[in-house]
Image (cartoon, rainbow, N blue to C red; front, side):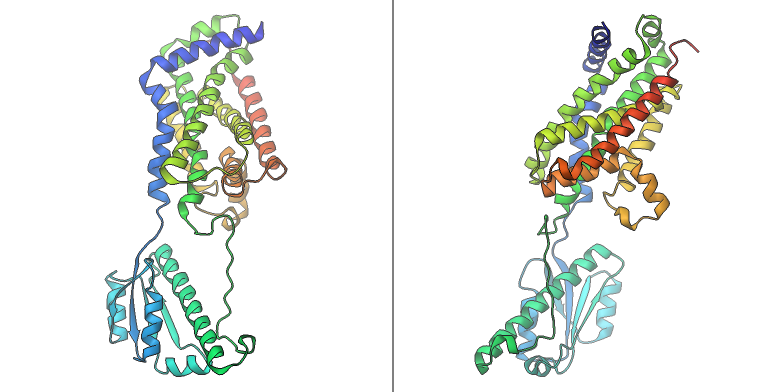
Length: 378
């Protein structure tokens, strides 16, 4: 009997969603649209950073080094400069993002292995592009020095192991070897866009309260649990559909492939929907108008989802109090789950703690919503 009555409310809610063009777009198409737009906005990979070179050595070896620096598409040589004042001018006007200063005696010191007289200047007003330029200059410099050591070993007959390098750079990158921002940001953004069904639920219930249509359900023999469960279930089903749409958009539009278990993804997604929709119920209970419910839902789900869930700012870099607050957000747990499934392909033995946290949130917030919901007119 309870399942039949709950399903009656569910069918009624599904009909309301499908008949309202705005609501149907909000819970189905808008998550994919937001994922594409936000991923393009926040996950743009840095390419072709302009740099300048101040070559004080003017030797064949220094020119060979410059050719190594700009041998790929990531660093673009805007030209040679003749003084540090020229470097300051170009950096101040934003013409370049970095500069390499090759000091006098470069060829001699490199050939003798006594040092590497190079200075690198980057524009700190744009940390992303400046850091990009610095890392690529460092990597190309390391490759150039190693190449010179190998040539010296062949020419002198001395074993390569006996020649010392002025640089010792060893880098190994796991899960995202190309350091492509889109591979990291897109899975995390899915957690934010999948909160839109919760935003829609809070607005829908508040709208029924505002227009008086909720009175008929309140007057019915439905229990509080049956009524609220019937309201939540359609948005869980639509949220699962949004998961598949997000997977398709991630692969087709951005080339981000899913490496984990699809069953685990669906399981944790339902876990996430229960937690977020329970919070949406609480928002709708305390909101008298649809506009207020929508504003509160956006304020709770979208803004903390962007800035506290670890998408752009690592949790370890947050103050302890802020980190504790972030861990109470469903999106924080779901971001960790999505990154683990998309990038690492890990299983339940790694992700169960995040799923348990979502389950506890869902049960706690859901119980509170049922207790606070008054099945009477006020």
